[in-house]
Amino acid sequence: MSSRMAGAALLRHLGPRLFADEPAVLSGLTAARGVMPVAARILPARMASTAAEAAREDAGAKHHGGAEKPEEPAGGQSKKAIVSYWGIDTPKLVKADGTEWKWPCFRPWDTYTSDTSIDVKKHHEPTTVPDKAAYMLVKSLRVPMDLFFQRRHASHALLLETVAAVPGMVGGMLLHLRSLRRFEQSGGWIRALLEEAENERMHLMTFLEVTQPRWWERALVLAAQGVFFNAYFVGYLVSPKFAHRVVGYLEEEAVHSYTEYLKDLEAGVIENTPAPAIAIDYWRLPADAKLKDVVTVVRADEAHHRDVNHFASDIHYQGMKLKDTPAPLSYH
Image 1 (cartoon, rainbow, N blue to C red):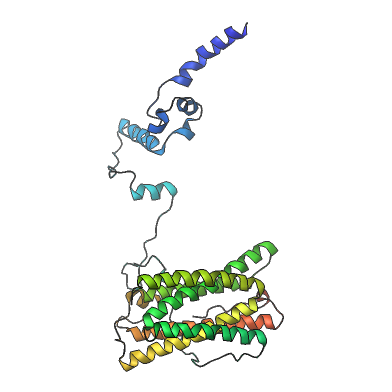
Image 2: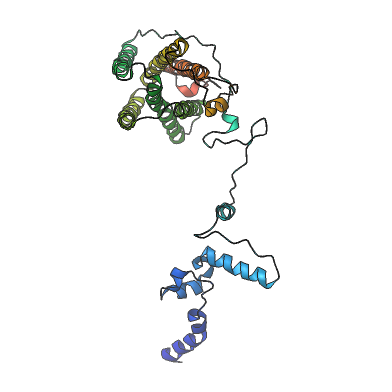
């Protein structure tokens, strides 16, 4: 048999299967292109759209007497259809009193009662050259911040928390990568530092309910975070003990700032307004809590972060690594 006759016979048998029109299987984009129907006949399951597949299933259900699906809203698939398609469903969370949990940024198991029994005046006395350098660096940053914000404590807290949430994330990320490439445990420090970063972020979410940053404050945050992130990233790579010491002194200054905030609240300089709802749920505060209660628990958090970072720096100064000393289970 010649090659021409063989080709004609093959085309006669396969032609109807390859070139038959089947618009119910193809999406609108597939049917508009001349080459795509051929590929769709060869690999129909891969080339067919999900919408067309759903339409075919609906037609089959109607043919067999099944119930019709509710109409989808105009503009595409409903949210429920997307959730069902991926097999993911958002859990419906409730509080202890049975009311709906409305915070998507944290869950009920992330909440806690803060330990406010702290030593506000606790201070790590710098003795070595790196410690003195870290202390002077933080003190030099304190001067322009005091001049800029003065007694506007809420605005100061916004900027402070955008910076304070960076070290934990950077340290946790670098320890995470080190654990992966060295095939070693982290001693729990990855989780501890990431929890610190998340806790600082929740401080920010809380003070956003107290005051809103102006455009120039947002610009200042962009500049400060951009510079501080890169500087701390490099600093942690070079010397983790120095980096943790810097954070320890930063947290000491944070404790001082929130102490001044409390003084103005107690003196009536700043109105002691009701606590934001997000703070009441996050720190499990009483329903009638005030702004003073919020600042008190935030200051306690900063004091715990201060102690943890000074402790982490001391571990390095003693010639050990963080993985050799278990991280605190909780410093809230």
